[in-house]
Structure formats: structure tokens, C-alpha cells
Length: 69
Image 1 (cartoon, rainbow, N blue to C red):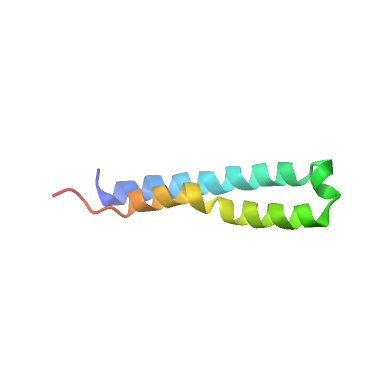
Image 2 (image 1 turned 90 degrees about the horizontal axis):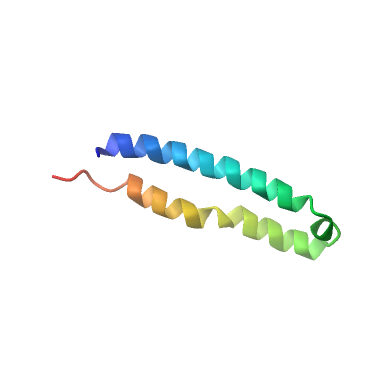
């Protein structure tokens, strides 16, 4: 697969990941047990804000591989 095709597919995958991740985060953030505690909210938003990086790293590394010769 050429790098241009990988970048296109990777971009679509990253956009889907960001959309799904944010929707899931909004859903969890509205739960009553989390809405009542400021400390739990702070921890949740740090984890949710940085957590999407772990699944995105393999996508980005796959996108940036050079073309096979």
C-alpha cells in the first residue's frame, strides 16, 4: 500500500477515533458518581484527555512507514 493511501486511511481512522472517544467521554462524564466529586472529575478528564493517544500511536506509526521498495 502506498504511503498516500495509508495517510488517507489513517486520517479517517484518527478522526473516527477522536469522535468516538469524545462521545464516550461525554457519556461517562455525565454519570452521577463522577459528577458529584471534583477530584474524580479531575482524574477522569486527565485520563480521558490523554487516553486517546495510546490507540492513536499505532495508527500514526503505520501511516508514516515508508513505501516498500
